[in-house]
Image (cartoon, rainbow, N blue to C red):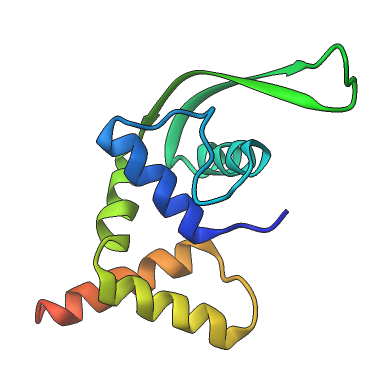
Length: 123
């Protein structure tokens, strides 16, 4: 499964706004996609999440996830703040599209921060 940075941004925004429920789909994304992104977001310290895997008895190969606690970390807030600058977000997404592939998360975040600094006259 590939990373979807728009989905990452949406999950972070919903968590920040306090109305995120894992059972619901987000913009047509499946629960499996959402859980995958939560897992990689936790690995990158964007969220603090307690994810527990439980097998379905009627479908042994299908997994069900139970989300215990979940919250944004400082790093998650910082990324979301940068991503909510529409110009910075679009510029970063355009760069990724021009590259024809995903770029490392750190590069994406640095690009947005550089754009925001430039916009504010700090660079």
